[in-house]
Amino acid sequence: MPMKKLLIAAFAVSMFGCQSNPQNTLPVQLDTQVQQGYLSGAWRSDSDPRWNGPFAIDIADTQDGANFDGALSFGGSSCPGWKPFRGVVQADGSVVLRSDLGVPCGNVVVSGRYAGGAFDGTYKAEYPDFGTVKLK
Image 1 (cartoon, rainbow, N blue to C red):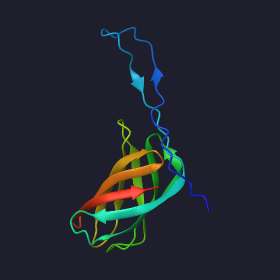
Image 2: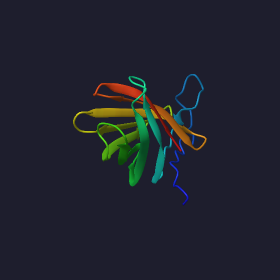
Image 3: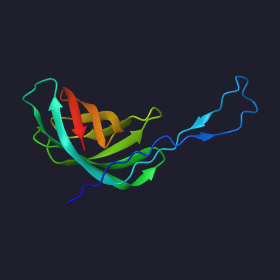
């Protein structure tokens, strides 16, 4: 079964006139887009290498500018199950997801980059725990 891919078609660059720009450089507008889809892979704790498991995100079909919503799952963790997240594409192209995983994990921030058909990043949870995530 083919998997839908997260596509960040970020950074279509639009140039504007530079009438009032004394350095004669052109301002840049970033156009970001995240497509609906599902990515799966794995997470691994850097706090304790025994903590790891499947990781997945499912991106909803709505987007408001650089902001988007979806659900994520840290399988094999103390807080399994699908939890909603709020995501944003940063100006530098990185992606940040924020979610509340509930007790005992608390809030988690996942950040990283999507390139070459894969998402590589890190996570930090209130548990406290931190580590890496890899998705395809």
